[in-house]
Image (tube, one colour):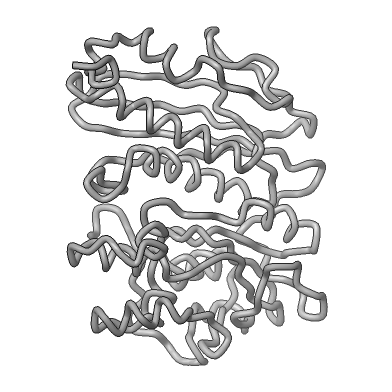
Length: 319
């Protein structure tokens, strides 16, 4: 058996930590990285935006569908999208990973490779974390961000008359999940959208600078998440399907599977696009596109002015 095939038990906790931390470069915002009791990060704004997500094997990812590297990238991406949705710039992530003793050390190393790679796309590093034994593979990531002297953009600021807009893809991850559930592995672009989302990290701070009144990421499905924004802002939101982007690729996959691609766009989660509201007479930032309007207070979410009877979306313990 080669060293790369050793289990985590054979490699040992500290040997595994060395494997996943040695030779890594940290950004200037990480004043002290892995190796001590805690990391030390710069916080020039004086406030820190914090979020955390837990990904469980078999629930949020499957290693028979995704590579360990893709699972690691996804674990970081879903957290950094929440930082961006507050209008903040990501500054760091810290990670916790639990796995059975017979897990190949290679799997953990590749998960961490993916985490570092995704963090690098946002200009940050992995500042620290913990590795523990467990009966199941679980990845927990805590992400931190900097508001850069701006106020956070919350879910509660949308106003009647505002423009509803999105940045990023919708429906691709849901289409990829449908393909994987049918036992297929292509088209690769659609399947990879499920394996590893590509949130538009820079779009969050850009939206904040452009005067976004409310914002969130689309993790559980467009309509399901808009319902949270509408409730927090006490407004109505109307999505106009003529403004939604349903790509040719989604139409092709829908045709092959006998599914309606618009349903994926409206109710599919895990793309981690950003959705926001903007003042009605302002130009939208680059990359953002209008998909609807904010309507009268307290009227919920409608599609083309009508109630949508299958909002879908993900909710833990209800699936």
